View 1 (cartoon, rainbow, N blue to C red):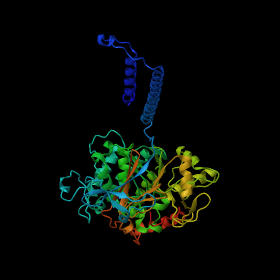
View 2 (view 1 turned 180 degrees about the horizontal axis):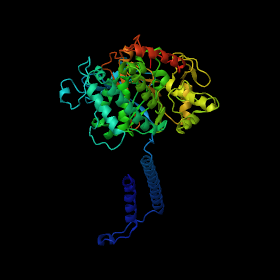
View 3 (view 1 turned 180 degrees about the vertical axis):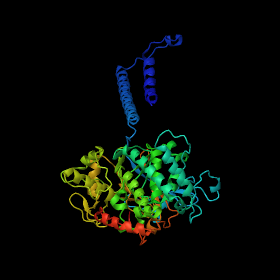
Amino acid sequence: MLNRVLQPFQALSCSHSSSTVARPASPLASSTPQPQRDAAADAAEMAALQARVAELNEQLAKAKADLAEVRARVSTLEADPTTWPGKYTVSRNVLVMDGQNSRLECLGTMDEITCTPATLEESTVASPPLLVSSEDSSQQPSSFQEEDDNPGRTIRKLSLNTEQRLAHPHLAPAQRIINFLRLHVANNLESLEAVPEEYAQMLIEVCEKAAVVFAMDPTFLSLRSPAYIMGDIHGSASDLSFFMGNLLNFDHLCYTPSQWLFLGDYVDRGVAGCEVAAMLFAVKCVAPDSVFLLRGNHELAEVNRNTAQYRGGSFLAQCRQRFGYPLGDKVNRAFNAVFAQLPVAAEINGKIFCCHAGIPRPLRGSDYRAMVELLRSNTLPRVEWWADYPLKTDEDKQWSLLISSLLWSDPAPEGLELDSEGYGPNESRGSRTHCFGQPALERFFEQTGYEFLIRAHEVQQNGLRLCLNGKVITVFSSSGYCGGVNGSGALYLNRGKIRLISCTTGIRGRSKYHNQDTATTTTTAAAAATTTTTEAATAAPTPSTSA
């Protein structure tokens, strides 16, 4: 770039020098009289040359300044990879996976969209197939495939290193649970019933190791792109396997350049809550710098142990059905001990705020900048039961309000009456929750410097939704939720782009526990559930059926 700027300056300098240096006179020219040059013309030519030199010097100085700015940005990125120098934008292309292959579709508007087929237009950009067809499935090395109503969809289990020599103490139990799940969850979960005690012990062991690993993460994460983001999974092992099997480079977490961020709600309502949570705990132990899990409202003990509301769909009921009583309660307590260690929010490149539900609402007299700094302080109490957390001081009240905001709130629907701070009631979630509107969101961005909010918490027909002027992105990664026909979604962040992924295949209902009247299948477990119902009477805000 500097050479291109200097080239005309150098050429001009050479031409100017050649015109002023005396040359030997030619014999033929000596006999011919030369006309006298006009002094005024010479002065005008000299002034023009000097103006051109000044112009080139100005261009040279600007080029040097641009080069210095670029070098400064490169140095900043090398020193702090979490900083992205530019602004983020949402890509209008959505990667849609719907059977034998995949395609890119284009969003028509960025204001309010739920990514339904009616609002998607065919894109002229070609996309290579990402899915394995039924004819080619036999050629794949993966040992995990799940039966599906759609024969074009092949579910591939997460493939990890099976080497026996594992140096880190957390890796051995993590690898054992990964291999065990690959062997026993290939086609159905009933095969696990033959080894309940062994399986329960393996789950407890991986929970103990995972709790140590998660405790080393701060409660507010600072991550960098590239990164994949997934929303609510709710015990859908097939969705987890599908996305990770297709999006992982080389099918191996340790060799992928992207980080993985999960936004919470791993259990409850789905049939494979134990398996989803255990697999995520295991891959966190295997790749602690690549996998990050946030806490959702269903990772609160007062929620996933609430058999009164969720009946057989609660995580506690699932543990009791799988392992009986009291072993099922022991497994449930082991998982909740890990849930208490999970972070509650994350930022990506300092520009994108991520959490399960909504922005952190401050107490009156405070602001959002103070809330983010409070999260950065890493002093958030890591407790299992937030419903019983004492509210003795203003700090206790602020923590309780933060948990309610980050784990329970929703974007305000159109027409909802908001207060002076930009918040409104959230009747579907309970009296202790709220909705945040456009004024509150804009104030949050203005005071913190964030540009987007990425959240989960609400089921979406095709797994994705953009709202509040396209600045709030909801991602939901559990298809067939509660017996419905919704798809699942994920996000990919890299080089200033937020790319949307929507999977519309295999969206039949998967939760056999939904609307099931009995909490468990054994008399002893049902009797034990009676005491838990009393414990859950003081549960945190009542969740809706949407998340």
